[in-house]
Image (cartoon, rainbow over all chains, first blue to last red; front, side):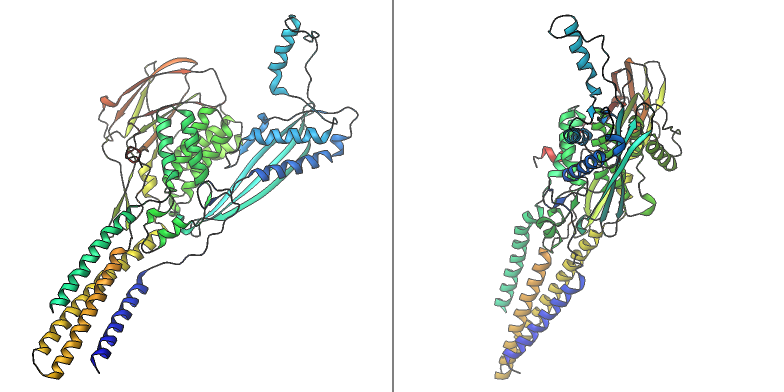
Length: 213
Length: 400
């Protein structure tokens, strides 16, 4: 064995030993994380909550369903309804602006109903009363309407958003199940004349680097 | 021989130089916008800047609640040379829990009960991700406030469920009725300073959490204008939440990196020693003077030099490994949260809050006097928040 062969053999042995050392101890290797949606606020972060497109879809479906309900729509006098957020309850894990949901529902329903439903704006009664007072005192023109009663409502739309969350600390997977319920309550009889529910599920898994913990 | 020793010294110098050069890279942090939002939010909340607290905590909680996929920074944290601190900061379970807790408090102040209950619900859920089964969802303060927010918005069924869960967790607290009116006034007093994250071990790969420093107060009492003195309910020990979380899967990665670094250092040292011994043997062989001895001795010296080089390179690789745990933390959190509902009649009331050590010694220098005007009945409970300590952040004062 000459000098060159001896050198090459010993060096190869050393390099092989180093390779063995590196392969033995590093615990790496991860599956690619699964994500849904792409509404990112921090790079790589996406949502598993109720998104704006979900609300649009839900309100569209609700309006179509409500407009196709004969007991509600086929009346000689257009029913008067209250649709505001006073009886919409958020019992979910979503920090939602409920006014956004309810306003969209009301406006969509107004446009679809084309006069077959009348909408009572109960939250603005103080506004009406102030204007009536101004008219009655003659400070602004218009007929004195203080003797006339303010429009009463026949129905009120109530609703609730609830959620159920399941998690797996082992895989970092999380799933949110949402259920959005609507009911139309007859304000004279307290009967619930219409109801429907919409559900959606969102799931995803955090990158393993964020696994809990 | 002289050449071999010189090259060995040069290589060792190279290791030191590379380690020093790598130090700033090791000190680099990934995206910490969530951490900064939490620190700013806390500071704003403590100084009664509700708008600032709302925007900061909303930013932070919106991000935390999402799914955190793999970013380039997160991938670099997994590499041998990358620090865990390269990953975007999301906080540990207790930090995430507290983020939603404060977001809920801001929403309660705003009277936005839907958002408040959602935030407290998410605070409870953050804790449910803790690994240890017996410590799942053992957070009392967010659970209580979840019940209060649901109670105020008329969700009595859900409120009863929250109060029932709280009662199972804390049977020492008075039994709460979901159908009763929500408390008119909620007094929340926070004591102490934030739990500290410290890296431990030769490779700084072990994340350890210690109680904050520089405070003794552990118990709180309040005296209302009428003279009644009541002990506040100790609702949340933040350190307990921090240390009962179990291990993290990423801890195994850090340990793997540390073992690799240690093995590289040992192997490098062994190769270096072997190389030096071989070089000495080669020199001795050459001193025989024969042609064959000169040839064999030369080969041994060359091999010795190569092995020394391999050893130095192996040590260099080991020195470049970064197994350090991420020790960024939310440093202006309290140590504990105390709470008491007060049903005071509408009008101004003077409250005197006093602090005591765990063994009941008074700390008069920390006492706080405040006057609160209880409003006529409104849907959401009115909040009075007091902290025994300032909410200054070392992290923010360093200008990071």
